[in-house]
Image (cartoon, rainbow, N blue to C red):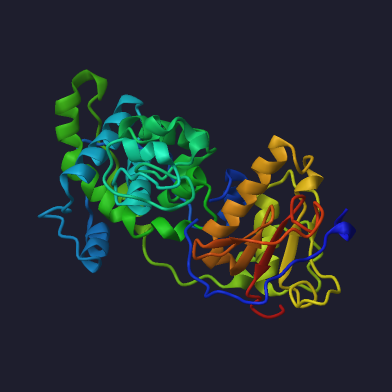
Length: 376
């Protein structure tokens, strides 16, 4: 199948810019052997989340004063309270509520964002614009999470987030950053690390008020073990930058890695873990252009899972494209080609001319090129 795949590459490159992140729980489970996990089970929500010396040290380093609180505008404050209320009503443990708050902080600053790519969202009350594909709301959720109006109603959006969190096996024992990424389908957990202390303090500031305002629908929380509060912030401590060698300990991917460069190997393994339905990924092969011969490119064969023009095939290809672009910095992505269009990590894209067939126009596979990183 891969023998039919013809590479396409542009003669110019655009500056690589970091992009944010999305991976399936199966990929997170593969990363778990490399990441710090909690040793205790989930803890019930507490009426006043503890800010221990460890947590205070982290907050001070970030310029957060636990005595004065975190300063937000009225919109983010109300949105954050809605997240807390939804969690209490669903009897989510405190750790889960803090995971949700940290996610909303990272994704939108807890602002309810519309998106120019989703015209319907512009007619719903919002607090600004986001530009990440079709993501909307405080969690920057894609349309498959629900209706646009639901996703831009913070309490409903939070309920959907919690429902997804509860489906992540063992989330109570994960570091909050890992649990957040498991729900958001992101490749690497460090993006949320700086938001956990702020989320913890926001919860501490507002949980009593939420319980008082919502009454029986938000059942009063109970006390928690102080050691869990320390672990919450320890999990958010800045980590040393991970090397490709460490991350490449993921299970081997579908492509032959013998002639691939480091970032291409990492991308091969990440895509293989995140999209197990893909049975064929092409890598090295002779070509007039540099990408495949130099171990810089992969062809992810969507047609190995579904007919390329079927709704399932198109949806799968779109998901792979979005996954690669949202994790572009971590995976060293240079560009992605899918369905006769080239995409860059900067968010820009451009059409390519008609090459005359499904393979040449990239309708049966997603082509991804990396910056290489050298041979292992």
